[in-house]
Image 1: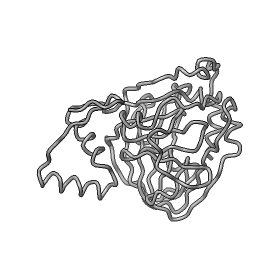
Image 2 (image 1 turned 180 degrees about the vertical axis):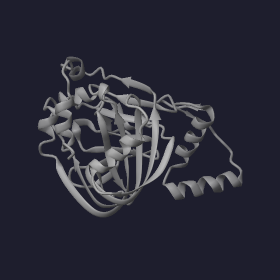
Image 3 (image 1 turned 30 degrees about the horizontal axis):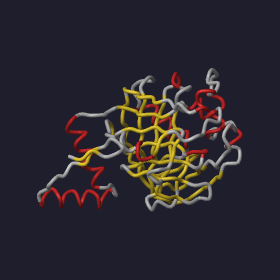
Length: 284
């Protein structure tokens, strides 16, 4: 075993031909990397990090314009394979799916997020579905959230949400890079808006209880990543004939707070819910 500078370890493993063939087929089918599949299998076997959210910074800090990067993408990947967030300077939308991190840019492009890229806010988990079903004939964001509400059995635990399928229509936005100290409402007032038809993709996100509104975005927060990795962003509205839904209940929250000067000096005593609702898009 070799210890790496970032605290991770390299473990030489010899795989038989059957396992190697199965691993290659899994990666071909899902787009995952071999490292991600092996790490996930080990975590499953050792019962590690299941139902745990690893979160960097708070929604209240974002509302106050605390956008300075405090954690690298490479470090986030040590704590999960699924999640969302943003990048230093509020530079676009972040999507973590199947162990790969993507950056949606305000010009409409999407790129793999560099391992050294810095993030001011991120939410990560190791996704393992507790509940799966098919949703049909979804006609709006409000329709989707109402059906998800009916599937949740309580109002106090966090839930990770993954939805896959074809969207007959989907509207989303991407935050534009902002100067430090510019509050979130002002920073997102000029966000880039996009609308697509008949796009195959996955929605990645979370439902957060209202009592946690100073920590995370209350209610539903979902980001799109299209299957061809050409389109991504924060979802505002949608329609779909059929989506495959997976829910993952979260009962353990690990909150990591930055020690940057801007975070330490920020006034986080207020209730950010109204500002978050406006900045996140005021879903109909």
